[in-house]
Image (cartoon, rainbow, N blue to C red; front, side, top):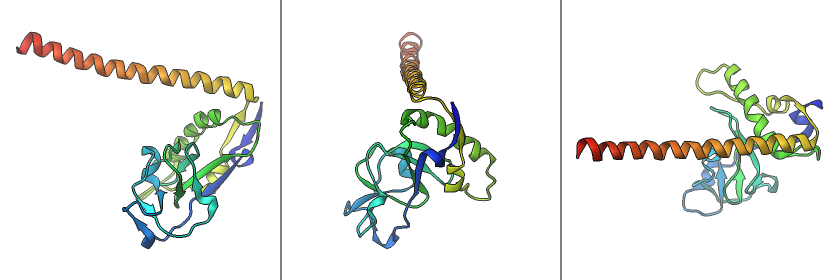
Length: 180
């Protein structure tokens, strides 16, 4: 195990300042990933114009929102463009597992968010993201940790759905027995 900074094992690309005069909602050009689009996994704002290739985002790329709530999420949409105040994390060190990073980084983002003072909206800098320091076990351990956390997350999601269905069943039975 060794202690590393995120900037030592990943490249961090901050989004591009695309001209808003070239935005549209007519699906002309490529979707433009803005802060609100990261969590929902799609964009209904498009950019029609030329752009630097490095700002192309593919399904599965890791993104971080840099204003308001700081969120790390895999992009779930189609090919799109990375707008300002959103950044892309690309692992450059072969000893780092993406699943491990995906589970680890949100904890640090929440700590940064909680410590960040704000008047209107909280802002996150690329420098702060690069400076995130964490313990990096060997890759096998990282994969095991990630796999266990994925399993726990799936169980949690399943139980949540079960609970919601149970609550609906209780309500319907109540109406059948008491109200009807």
